[in-house]
Amino acid sequence: MPQLRPFFLTFRLDHLEAEYRRNSLFRIRFQGKIAVLLGALLYVAAGLVVDIWCNPEGISWQLWYPRLLALLVPATVALLIERELFDRHRDLLLALVGFAAGAGLIGVMSQLPVSQATYYYPLLVVITFYTYNFVGTSFIYALCVDLLLLAIYNLMFGWWQPFPLSTLISHNVVIICANLIAGAGGYMAEWQRRALFLHERELELERQDHMHRARHDSLTGLPNRELLQLRLERAQRLAGQNDLLHTVFFIDLDNFKVINDRYGHDQGDRLLQHIAEQLRSCCSEKDTIARIGGDEFVLLAWNVWTEPDIDKLIRCLQQAIATPMANGLFVESSIGCCHLTAGQLPIDDVLRMADATMYRMKHSRRVQAG
Image (cartoon, rainbow, N blue to C red; front, top):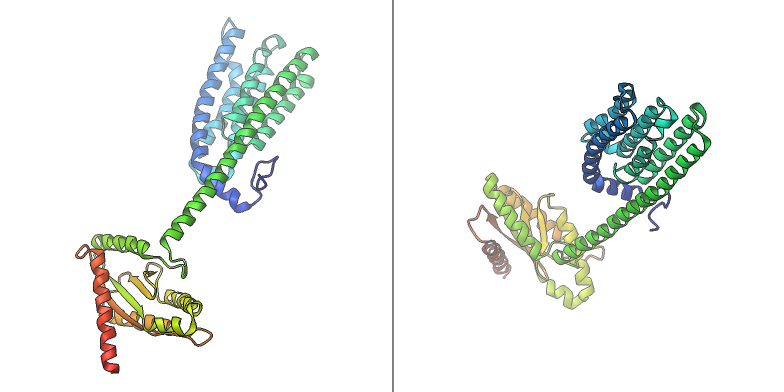
């Protein structure tokens, strides 16, 4: 994937990385909760089992000091996991859970003779797999944690409290092999999650594009009849819940056929696009202006119902439509309206009433002109 940095497994584009982190936050939170709880229980249980195995005479409570200190980290992360701080630093916090487990284990081993300490090192292999594949941190953080633990392990038992060289080498071979296997698994899992995110994102963008084209006029980009119907139904439902009254305006362009016949359909299309842009200037964010026919538009105006408001909006619409293009071409319009109230009329009847009002206005203008 060219969008992905191959080593760090992060997207090169910041907005894509931010979107991925937002989309994966719920999964990381859920996985983190399970990992912290289950990891703490297994940490305590494994410690008890190995303590009893290595110390038949009884458990040495001195060994529990580093364990309890280590358990403070997952307890703190569990308290922060629903907070904003976790959102910003989730990889670091979850990586610290794995580091604390490993550091606590090394602290336990440092208090034991070699003959007993070697019983504990397989738990470090378990912690390696836990950090890479279960705790929920990203691959690069898990890699840093496990390499740091390996370095601390070698400093502690290769120099501070040296194991026999053969023992230390055998431990290193096993731990390094565990890192290679668990790290490869964690790397591939992270890669696949990000590849799946990109694939799902592309599918969603395609779906939104198809939906937009299916519900919008291809020439003007305005909502079409289908989307207008949905928004009218929604406005009618909300009108009943909130005691609102909306108005539907039916807009017809006067003599638009003459424009097409005289100047050609290309000029007619440009004029329609110009008018659509002008009409948007009369609408609020909640309003819907739709093109439902060749030269017919419908405006759903939210919470506009008084006569002064209706007259003001009609004047604005007529002036917007009559604004000439750069070449001076323009048309005038006839506008009719009908109130949209809570369930009193079917949507189709509302449109027919607004259409009828528009035709009455157009007819009266013709009579006056004659």
